[in-house]
Image (cartoon, rainbow, N blue to C red; front, side, top):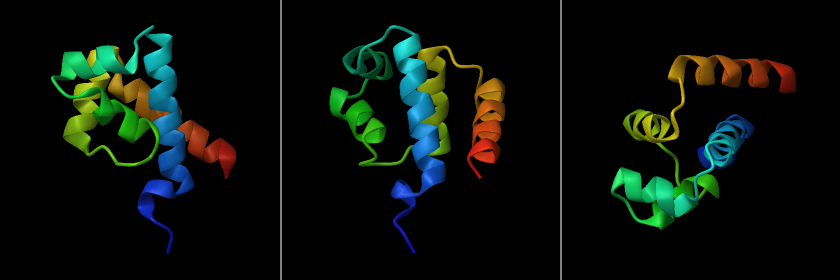
Length: 83
């Protein structure tokens, strides 16, 4: 069984999260500052070195201005498209 951090479903999730950050015009360091975390926190989840749990995702989503329901719907659509 592959490491869950490298499975395709999580790769889609982190790609979408990274794209959302870039669309918001924020650097990793800016997101980290708003979260009260080091820049490496953002770098690690964007490079698949760590996974975000639900509470962390919700914090990141708030910083990025993500509508969580819309993000998850888009994520499900992307999963279906790639199957």
